[in-house]
Image (cartoon, rainbow, N blue to C red):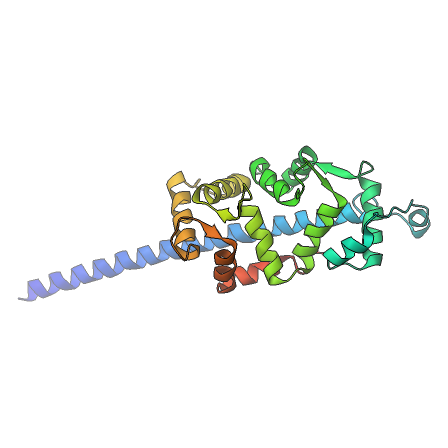
Length: 257
């Protein structure tokens, strides 16, 4: 009888030990993912600051004095009033932004290769080209293969000063690769793969494709409310607004510039 009792106790102890090991592995996995996310967020903030400096003309002129600044040629967008109504910037801010943009980008545009090269500077451990392409396409509203001042400043306005709904709409547009108003599983798979490629060696061990597919399934279980196989903007925004972690992440750019 005593032997049976001791055997049962030993079994229960082993089960508890295995459960503690599983829990510890889960915690370590969460800590690693949290660390990766923080690192990625820091780099995204730096990239946003870089774009802001590009637009404001301070990218290569941090040490210029006021006399040099006063001699800079002033440029003005033709549709300044319209641009002011489309952004959260004042007329004076837009004039300063435009002047700086023209100083660093005399051609008045940023092409995709330049954009990718800038983005790669902030993620040297991975391959950022695919994610940078998706990001470029989200900025490139008229789909002409280059970013104008108007396109950059409108998106910068949303990221830095936009409302919650504006930021979520911007994020949805990024994930909606073909811009048909829906996020498919294939699109989310492409986005997630590009993010893991972007983080590169900072992810160890490398995630297998099945792990990425599981992330996609989890995303759709949460977001695809009517279970029709695609996520609409309304579904995306509604679910995001109910997720405290997502809502907190939207504030990451609030003090970026």
